Length: 402
Image (cartoon, rainbow, N blue to C red; front, side, top):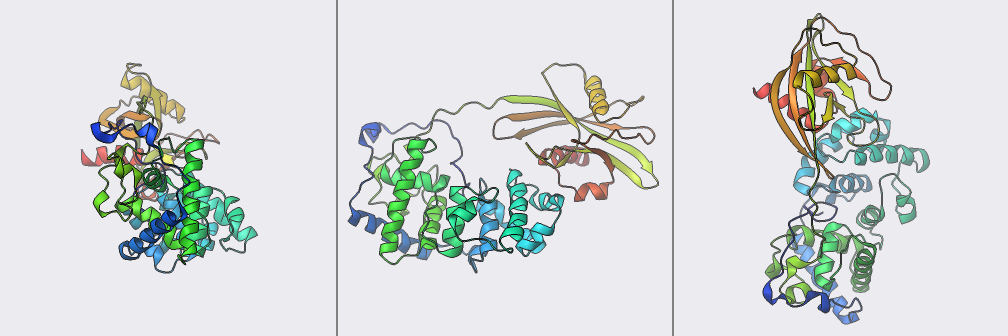
């Protein structure tokens, strides 16, 4: 499994080609390379992977459930990040049936910190569908895998080939980068024409590997491992690559120029205020005001401290704090907020900048429940058990560290 993210390589500044790289656009490789060359390329990869294969926990048995969980976690996330989450997950949910039986909130809590929470929601739905329609077993056919929530062509090919040794190509961001460099594809591999070229190359090389007695599992994992360890987005280790004598991009002296990527667009900045409201100690102890996000969308189903967006310079902190409390069905009374600090949180499509406030409320204010965004008071012990968006944990850390 790769240690890089399971989608396209991280966005970087537009890379300049070396002066001696030549007119890359006019020297793109043909996809129709001789069959003998395909065989040598496939053989070199299989031989390299046999010695470079990392002892990752899901590789111990290639149990389909273990492979499925690892693939879901590794989408857009590095292996080093995933490993502790994977181990805790397997302790909490040893079987697929355990996932299906668990409340969604427990699944989200186990996923907390991995991000892209739609993966966890889809995993939960898929587990329930598998229990209902497949007797709790993960299917080995691509069509059946593609019918499950959260599984696309890449994931289906990875599960079918790695768990079941089925002859199915599997192309993620790492593999796209590796093949774009190998074949010298001067195109954006995220667009239809580029994706088709990469998948065609993967299918052809997989066929060459199988013709030599190679296993689909080893070929696909080898491709992923090559992208993770050697053919990295930046500073690829070309002298160590098993494909160094075959790679078109290396021959052009421009490995980092492939695959071509459009100019990076600056992420818009969205600003807001988050409120950490605490009521005084009651017989049950002190409590925090939290709300649950809608079931879909960003951080769907997770709990958070209330926050609202605003334009820079919109009102004073007290006014924004009052708006937050009104939104949560509270009355501020005579309380005034205390600034805690500022937190930044990068998301895929925007950067979120929040000013955090702390307020102690008088009495035991009642709650005005909203069906799509429920609000409640929770004790510190309960707060620790709730699945929360990381941005709320960051805000809490401001208070505890101060």
